[in-house]
Image 1: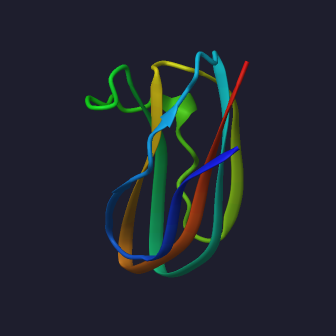
Image 2: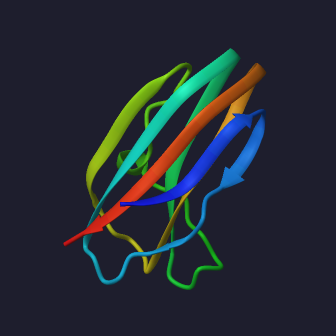
Image 3: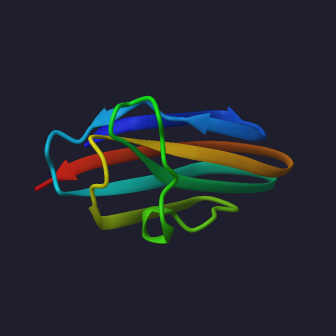
Amino acid sequence: MARVLTLTGQGTGTVNSNVLLTKGSTLLTSILSVTAASGTPTLDVELQWSSDGVVWASATTPDAFTQATGTTNEAIDQVTVKGMYVRAQAVVGGTTPSFDATVDIDPIN
């Protein structure tokens, strides 16, 4: 399992994670863990795919976590790999939001 994104006190905005090479895997699991939230926050996290690590495509519905508005732990399992590279994109919104969160991705065969 690789930690690709860590948010600490993250306010509004969009954050892209580190890029992970899927290494020929056909499936992966991803885990979102939100350990702290304050204000009136929203956190939307989705997986994005790329064949070259430069041009990215947004995830489809099964590749996105449920919007977080507080602490949570959620896994999305058995995600079909759609590119050679994967990353997580986090969008924080709301009124004076702050999030501490991590996203882990585990390519599996």
